[in-house]
Length: 94
Image 1 (spheres, rainbow, N blue to C red):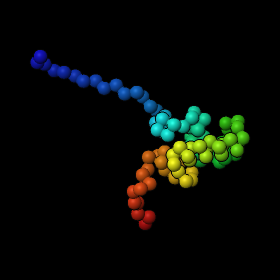
Image 2 (cartoon, rainbow, N blue to C red; image 1 turned 180 degrees about the horizontal axis):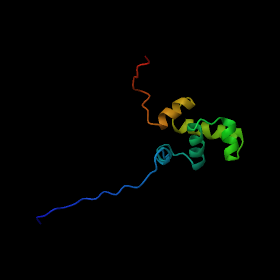
Image 3 (cartoon, rainbow, N blue to C red; image 1 turned 90 degrees about the vertical axis):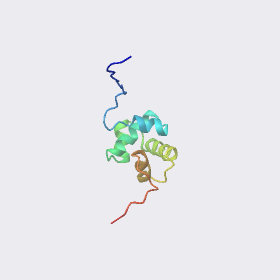
Image 4 (cartoon, rainbow, N blue to C red; image 1 turned 120 degrees about the vertical axis):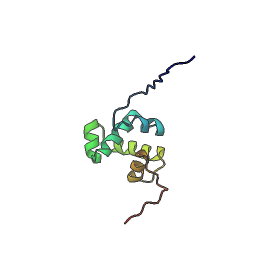
């Protein structure tokens, strides 16, 4: 048939700075996502524990699990991975 055709694409909305993609990619639990969000906000271990009403050792357990799931050696590397930074690319350190 001749004529004008219009296509429509519908995407599921994700708010800016959403961690849902990260959670799915690395299989983070909801609590791990909460801990990650607070780490990204610059909170310290004790602040995270207080805000989530859990012990500092429980926060450390969540961080340890996230390090394993992202195959990271430390928190900085984990943050780089969840932000999608490629650790194999060479970036000049001028």
